Length: 228
Ligand code: C5P
Image (tube, rainbow, N blue to C red; front, side):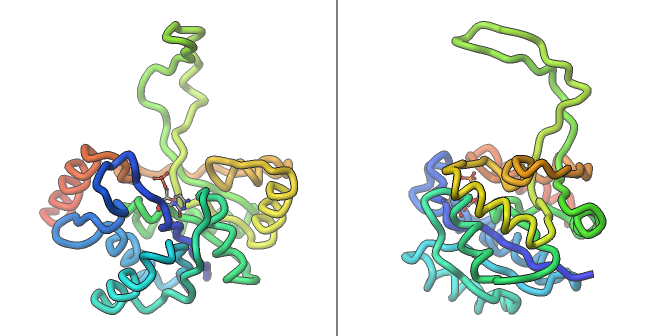
């Protein structure tokens, strides 16, 4: 089984407040971006990595790839203003394929068994995404007032990777562009096509590094993995 992976890495990371791309911040002395890239560099199922980057960061990222011996990056197209546009520019760079994964470059703790389960699900069913069950009581709130308590048993918190047959994601992106529809993940675009998207259960460790607190959590995960 083979797949190509798209890593959107062209965000600004404003919520981190680091004054630079959060993907360059280090965990255990290595940039977050490299931690994520190494997962796919090691995975034999991964044919190629497509990285959406900012033009101003391309040279620096290129130097990191050399420094850390990342060899599977096939293209680094310019990202867009929105994540969806960054993913789209990578789809154009890939051109055609069978299974494509989209994974936030800011989620370095994804593990290979989950990636494989996901890729197989997409191969069999067309579209699959990873996530975890909601742990807390969930309420819908408007203007600071509870509107309702939502039945938690059906709620999942969605992560990446998300995996699709290449042509299905391509079609969903084309239609989203035509309709000026902006989704917060790729699954939303495929859901609009009326296609079933299947859930693969992942781990609470697969966090997206977004704020400074996540860095502390991330270091703890790595310490535990090294220790174990
Ligand atoms: O900002 P957020 O954490 O939601 O971004 C998720 C991922 O998408 C990050 O890896 C970020 O670099 C990427 N991104 C992008 N292009 C954008 C916005 C975000 O590639 N315009």
